Length: 402
Image (cartoon, rainbow, N blue to C red; front, top):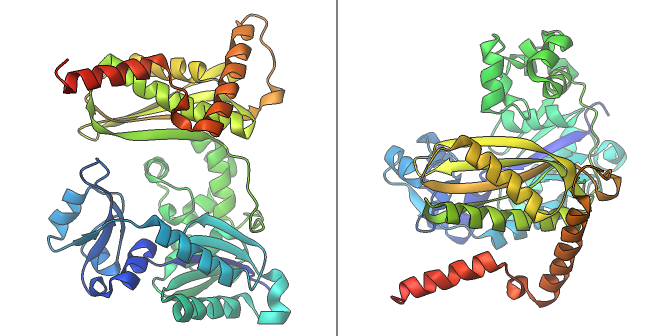
């Protein structure tokens, strides 16, 4: 079999699931949207009719309604999406045990070992497409290729309810003519950099010297060059396989804009605690901290710095985040704050720094690990920092006129 890697993408997944429960939305522009009142008022998914009217995922509701005044909005039901995601994977697993989730509605399948039972990769894709439609009432688009990247290109190429084969014979004639942002992991920032150097198609990336891509985008440039030339050799991981995380983060869209130093500190501290707890649960430490700050006017900046030695305690993350925030001195009314820990290394591999107050850090890590255990046993609210308790009492007194 030449092409045995499949990428299955469930079309307009959230919106399609909602129409199973409310068929009246099937023939009108409809979108699944977050809660406008709690500051999550963005489009999470849309149906084809809304897409044709220019509605885009992740745009604010007001902007979508401006494009499409008759847009019908429904709240998300994530338990429904999880249910149908599991049902779809159950179908996929009848053809192979090599099923790797990319998102709730996307999976890669390796069917190279299934040819004798079910036929070629294209035949298996057609069987899966028809079964999902008949058994679940949903449609999928499936790309069939010899690697994961080109299979995903295939599933994106023709929607909805389609199977596209992107083999080696289609590489120069079709794939290389696609815009560079169709390639996996080419986001807006990377696309802008590529266009600055006159690179507009996947073929432009493929024909460029590897050294030029490296100098332009570093390791990411090398990866994109390999992808464009069909040299992706990453395997499809078995169902249930879980790779170690490359970064761990948390962000919060605030219920109201925050403007005071105290509010910023409290929010960063809570974020640092959750990120640090996840680092410890994964048995890793962070060598880098990145913050994301978004204003009430949707302006945004991200900044990062190293942590030496790598750490997994909340104080180290908090201090690094706060320092990065103060360095910018934007004085914004803040809508969103986020902390991400990167450059993760196994905790046991971190070298002790003789010139740092390493004993204090180790004591903090042991203390916070003990707090993790208490919260696991008695609930997340069983142990709180004095800063957050004081803040809550202050709010309660203000509300009561005290």
